[in-house]
Image (cartoon, rainbow, N blue to C red):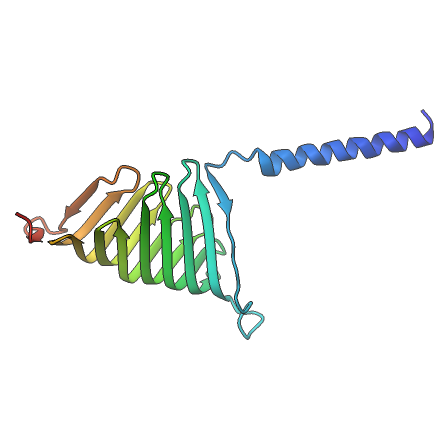
Length: 194
């Protein structure tokens, strides 16, 4: 082989290896959740260059079942001890289920895990789904376990029915729910049911 042929062979081999690496790294990734995080800093990082605050945050992800999760916040702060965690203010989230149903969640604060997309909503939490509305102070929402748990001063309303309870657990996939009190002596209060 002459020098020119060797150089061409090396270049072609390099292109083939880079292409194979790219395909395995980005296209054949077998994670169950397809990651599409869009952090859109409206006004970049705030005044201080060493600040961990970001304005106008938007995250979006799709799981392997085709459910889409969107999370928006007015402001967020990266956890200094764990950069995969973000603390959020004025949070709105939408879960677009593949059966075309939409769950909307709003809260004053949130804690979002960038790796598994689990979110804890707190303070003035409102979750709506079709004609159902659940109000509480704390919501642990997990796409990985398909479980949503609302607690602390929980009020569920649908039509003219109102339930007061300590906790509501909802299976996101099946929509099955459990409503209960933490103290076995106390009972769930139901108003308006016949």
